[in-house]
Image (tube, rainbow, N blue to C red; front, side, top):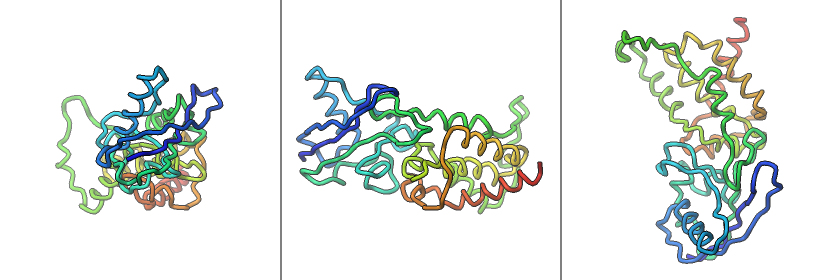
Length: 248
């Protein structure tokens, strides 16, 4: 397969940045998108040029590190997959592929396709935890009966990998889907009830302070999310937030 890559290059946060064109050939359809970028970088290094910087780690759709905006879509044209799970057979021979980093004020570009997503870490640090006895006298998790429906919904919310596709695909750069998933996975379980009201207030406040936009219920975040996190979590978070505000 022969392709033309239009890739965003940016030397650092203060650099203006630009799109650069790279032709690439002999790409197998069974390659992953990141393997294709590895081949490009090998060619650039052989020529003495700077390789393209991009985030990656597990390459199994688990860690949430890979974060590319491909042809105007977070993680590319496939659904339910991360960039590392995207295969080149989703593209046509001779196609031009545009590759950009996540675009959001709260996700500043570090270099090329790498962005700083530490805003998510600060949101989690503000409330994404539970009070658990770790002194050696812990209670077995199965000792607390939990309705299966609640357990299933909590598990579904917990599948969020924090990749940031929801922010990148939202016209407002809102992090509501991410935050609501983290709030929901704890709010649905008895272990999360202790800090429930304080948690949602702190996490939403931190989200706003980090510069994320507001949710306008477009639904693009749910469509682009590689783990299929539901908008129902946003509705749940809004209820939790209202409850927290009324209890103050």
